Length: 511
Ligand SMILES: Cc1cc2nc3c(=O)[nH]c(=O)nc-3n(C[C@H](O)[C@H](O)[C@H](O)COP(=O)(O)OP(=O)(O)OC[C@H]3O[C@@H](n4cnc5c(N)ncnc54)[C@H](O)[C@@H]3O)c2cc1C
Image 1 (cartoon, rainbow, N blue to C red):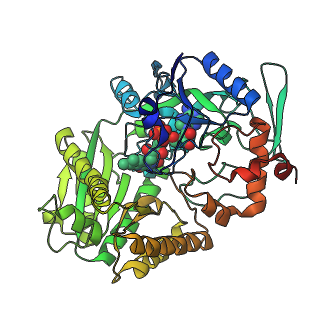
Image 2: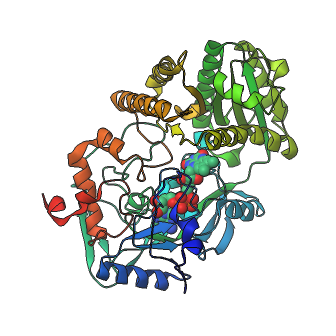
């Protein structure tokens, strides 16, 4: 098995897209089989060596930044084992290190769709499952969790388990009992918190009454075991797609348009939930993404066709078929007119070339912002909160009131269909950074107060764990740590991710 130890060889594995500095490890190992991984883990538990699991390193919260010990890189577990078609969809079996974009291409070439689509498509399937990644299409299709049917997981002790959805559940007292190949069982009590009632949530362990045990591992950010292989559910590939970037002069009109498009989509989906049934000409957005006035200011640097009068925009996508395309287009146009969009100056796409241009527009914003950070040598202050439906309008106003008219530059954009917009504050110097973090904390407190979550898709990692405490409180963090101990008795996996290492000491977990 390949092992790298030289500083210049392992440098890339000591950071991720959080740009947190200070990552360090004595070596990076590149296992090729589940047996390799089981052995590395059993040895590490024996010697109490910390282990950080590495996917593609596109995570934004420092989950894969190692704080000592060794790194298990999943790069060489990169085989798509099968893609098969079945009635009404299909199944793919992939190793953890398969890149999302490779899986999507393989699946699409079979006329199938793997819906999860975080914007950064170079990430690995294992990383996606470990963070329960979502993206623009989550509005229609939900997060990665919905597509995971089976997981092969290597535990810190070297035991390997295979969990298939539907086969193992927590009991009524929230106890789980997982049989191991050795004949032993892992027995553990689930934490007693209730997760926020939001459309997207990626903060802490997934807990539900009588939950499927497989769900505990999805979104566990490399703290409970190494995901080695996964079986994913696939859907039929839609025949066509309509997408648009539509501009508004007035923010109230834009928000009313979103409410209307959202409600109709949700209602129509209840009537015809399956893509294979076709959408029979009904409006049914699969993505509803927001750009505020400040985002458009950024984008005008690159796109001088953004209308002068526009104070906001929505990117939408809807799947179509040949029979329904015109009818669907007409429905969007009449909705846009009803809400006074700048329809004549908006952009629409029905073929792949034009869709790619609109997607590029959407992706340009993070790129332009990253260039800004590089110029000012600052880290971005970026929110990832989602709130319940009824709290969203108030939350957006809260963000705007805190930032509008002030000195700080910022953008607000993202997954408005899921009540989940990213507020990015762009400090130009350390003083501004301090102010930005103080505002960030107010946003966290507000999100928690209205029943929201502190991370809807990027996870907690090492950067947001103090805010997880605000969401759940110390007692629940202790319960999470005790649960982790049941799977990882030496506390080697993902140290510093989700909760402080001090919580993992034996005394703490016995309290
Ligand atoms: C420009 C940009 C846009 C993004 N857009 C989105 C978006 O729209 N939606 C979204 O959800 N995310 C988004 N992300 C975040 C990121 O792409 C996702 O979190 C992704 O799922 C991380 O995958 P990865 O393979 O890069 O994981 P890594 O960053 O390598 O790791 C992430 C975490 O998962 C753990 N892990 C990795 N592999 C395994 C494994 N096999 N077993 C157990 N644990 C493992 C790591 O230890 C770490 O804690 C974006 C990131 C960037 C840079």
